[in-house]
Image 1: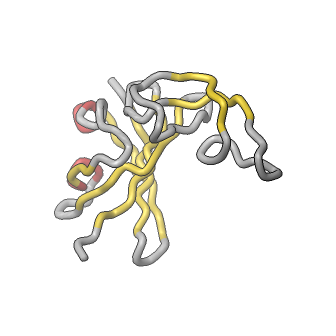
Image 2 (image 1 turned 45 degrees about the vertical axis):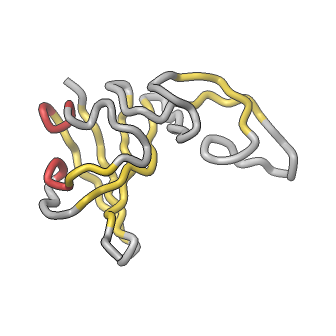
Length: 116
């Protein structure tokens, strides 16, 4: 069974909290992608909507929204997430994960979605 640490950011207050999700609730998060919206009752926030903004794997490799699937690849990166160049034009090959949540993901970053 998967087990995730879900970091929930509140854009209004600027604060965040970390919640552990296990078992059946964690299984319902598997297969979602960066940018997907899910119900906050899965993490103990009923009545709120959460949007997935990113995450990281077991070895700390970040998820990239432009890499499809749940794969782990070494790709040439011109900038974040995953690589922050020191000078303009620098690129580097780094290990990153795809945009889909799998059982190898440890942390999922989310933010509360407020209706405007």
